[in-house]
Length: 261
Image 1 (cartoon, rainbow, N blue to C red):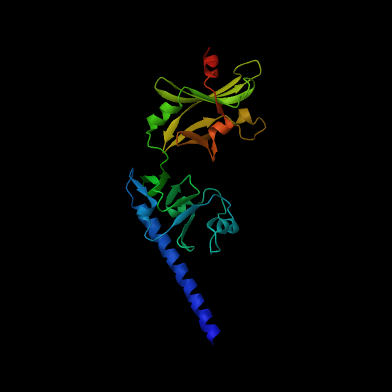
Image 2: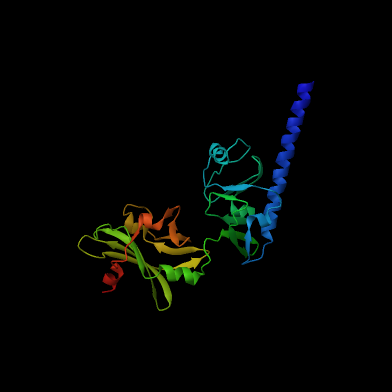
């Protein structure tokens, strides 16, 4: 009889925890949906529950990997497709809230470039509220869009180590329009292929079209692809990698000058 009572108490406790987590998820999403456009907030400002750390997981993260990351076994989900939002809030080794789903279904998106955030980290998010869909983007710099552009324009990043074949990107301005010039360098011929694309900068991201077909000649994708570089702590990132790990910046040469000649 005693074992049955203990088992029932455990079951009731689990049900209560699950119910509270669902309540926390709904209240969290509802709090974000009413945020005003262009405001800036911290996550702790909109979480109606206590938490120590929130973890962000990418596509196809297994349940085992989530548990390994948070440091204890817990009832958690796994991301099963691209584009899913997956946040796990933890308090005293307990999952107090889990946000998982496609932004279009949730009505919110949270773009964070940190794998985990502690409640005292004071990381700021910028709010975009467009016709009921709210997106929070981690603010990685205090520079304006013009400020970011002024730090990258008239600079060339390339894969060149010795001045011969490779490819690169040059940012420049022409007729008050911002451009990225993607270039393919040949051995003995400075620039053999180019692709010019307008640049837009929004929420710390530098967007432009990249000629995928020039780099990967066997690719089935023949149209240029839109990519975004994150500007964070005065460094450009392509995904999780610093752009300088892929494209070296060398102020000693400028292949754009050779191109326009």
